[in-house]
Image (tube, rainbow, N blue to C red):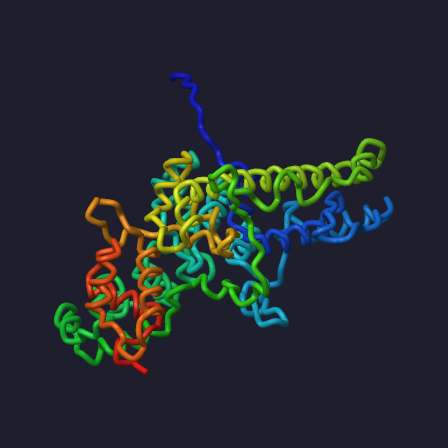
Length: 452
């Protein structure tokens, strides 16, 4: 036997909360803090969130404790729910949107399963890494290296995530997503074989080729297609609520200072809530053991949220500063000056994982003298390179194309070939086919359709 000392990084509840708050938009964060202030009496929102509330009396506190013992398992917003509430469609608000989010929906299911703590945290971390469609786009090896969670536990966590609702959540790609859904309903045979190995051929309607490869009839392929079409290609989409955002609240402001453009976050140094002095005093003065235990838990929760919000603010600011530094010409000259920028580039510069950058810019907006832009707008791959070898971003190429189309003579509109030649003349050499692709993405018809 041998005693070996080693360091192991563990994903704490505080870090998990930091990941969760990082990907929240400004509106989602406000909503979360309002909910928190309702169930945690030590949280006092600042004026821009809610008016100050009168402190409840000490007797009220005991009543809250008894209620929370039945309804609040982890001193967080996760609450017990009835079986039918596991159906996301039950949680439809009066405005037609869903009150639930995908991460919360998964977390509620975990609350009821009661799995071991380390596995529970790993599953919640994976849930926080899902994109809007419910896909896990990062490899387990990457995430294991980032968090220090053993790869074997990550694999168990992913298997558990795959077993939760909605069916198909946590898949790496469309093929696996559909496969998970078919396995959930017990469907086997042609449908399962097609989604595993012949999905692209099915999309192109190569029925005979699929039938020949699987040794079945064309009619059986069509029947399998009918089953596959009933599946959900984006299991997380039901939780997306783009229509519910009534207004855009910029998270980052960019202004010129001494000849350089600099980013500042909206929150600054001011925290969005404070911890009630009344309850701090009550904790130190009360002789009631129940009250002390209750307040200690609530105080720790509030301090943890404050820490996570501070982390969110710092990470968002670092990402915004990196974007602003790379896109200085955009703020001076406009969209045509956007340079290619990948999330991986910013992640490498900041020394963080690409998923951290992805979560940081999710539903975040930047305001500058030219208007308000989603932060994702500043990321694009290279569309081409000019004669000097300098890369031209796809966003900049589309902006130049839009400008040419707006300025053309509508009685003699330019063909795609002419547009390609003019863009090359202006230092953005892209092919006629790429011009057509960008034009179609902007829902702009060809030359004959634009003629007046």
